Length: 406
Image (tube, rainbow, N blue to C red; front, side, top):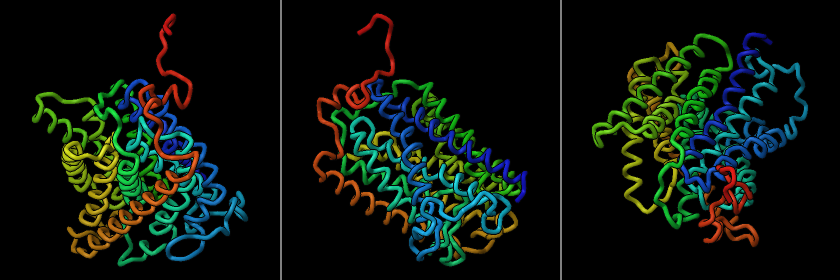
């Protein structure tokens, strides 16, 4: 056990946890003022619910021994794991690896909520959290990181910090949720608090250094490279989105630049342990452009993915996963990509993308459909509750109260 690596991974775990409140503010600023508490609570409550699910059975299903598709319950309640046990092949405690992975499990379902804000029942969401982490997140994490089939398919699918497991998984689930929940009564949306959006994006950018640079589980050169390329891709994507906005509208939107930064962070996530700075630049520029176009196209459809979860996390994750197979450098992560002559890695990446998309969409659709049919649950609040706003109807609170005002 190495004290330096342990100290770094404790820090990285805390950084990743901070991303969920960051997401809460990012999403909270984008909705109307009458729904900001509800939107923030979707993310905040995930920190409580998923933490309990993870230590009871989530970790065991994701990383326990089992089949090629899912782990088992042999580690239920972290049974048999003590404070002196070192995680497989590394120099940190197994309990610390469990903590680090818990933070990924927390933020992934929180990402989905951007698709159904302003109209989804909070009580149903609590049940959805438990089921989705158990039946969707844990299996996909097992496929890629827990000894499952994608980790051994071809030369192994490359996903350093969660392009498939987190972002594609959540992005596609968001589409399923938006389809089943349906459009808002008034889908026109102007962010009620742009400073919240920028603050949230800044917290995400900051926390993402733990997300990516911590995923090698060591305080070493690969972690430093992951930190550097994460920042590079985020900067490139933010600037790309902003410049496209400036060219198209004559103005550079703060929300757009913040969204571009998040898109770049998403796209570099699977690649951060495998690419260099030039690859990160290409990934960031691609993410800024592709996700901008995806938002534009989504707005022309009838799909009310309110906060553009698929356009940013889904499209960004797909691009990042495939780009990892293109730009991977053997000297950095041990695996060459197409540019270094290993075009087969792109095929492996595409298989991982398609498998994650198919499973996440179908499983999420089934889960939500079943919840919608259960008496007393259902997916959607009433029309009156939607008009009133979910802050008051679901939580009995208002985000902004002036002295002397009703």
